[in-house]
Length: 70
Image (cartoon, rainbow, N blue to C red):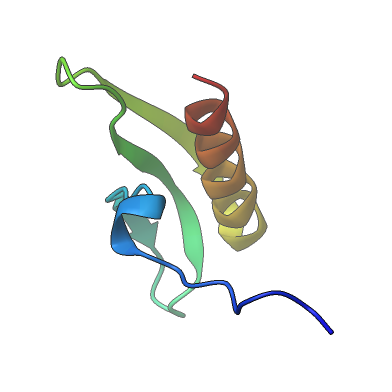
């Protein structure tokens, strides 16, 4: 049989807060915006500009990938 169950602890994870700045048209469609926030302990911020709702998801994924690489 397997070993003991894996227990996830808050200290095992790193949490980030991402801000969104959106321009939305009258039909409630995302036109463009920025996603980002504080990236390091010195308080440096990094923002990624995007276009459209598909770009929003890509920008979030790009920000998280760059943060994980640092």
